[in-house]
Image 1 (cartoon, rainbow, N blue to C red):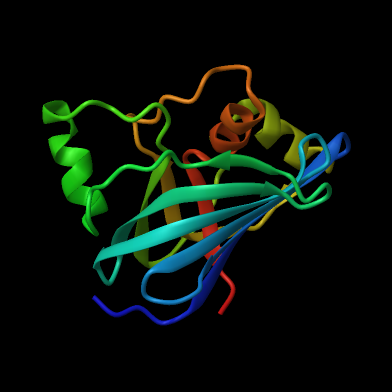
Image 2: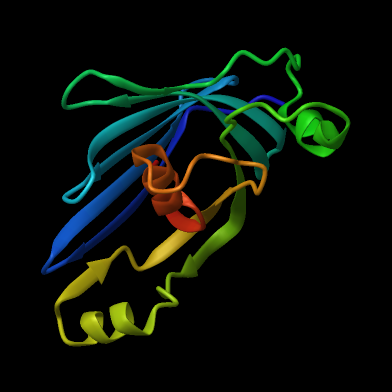
Length: 171
């Protein structure tokens, strides 16, 4: 399935800090997720991209770099599963689960929708003028449940911050 390079963005700020997440589909097989957060620093996820349709696909994280230090904080363990990320996900019960694997699923919407935070505290902060985010979104990004990153690790905190976010198209 051919895709055209495109970019999506999530952004939120509060009086305590801000977080920006950018997803860029580089070509048919690759994507990058960049995170800049006051609390977590700046990181770049390098991903393999598998498109299942025009509006649906998977991103398998192969590497995470700390942009500020240049340190690689995650590298996917070598697993031979061909090019079918989705097929691996569905059939993994028949295989030994890799030590750590990070796969996101995305769904692009047909049209932009209103972005409500779903968090009463954030909604109240926005009403009072102490929080803000982009008003609409065009894509959901979900972390697949097979991910088994140790809790309390930097990588776990980063991917938890990306799970279930709503991004808007910047093209």
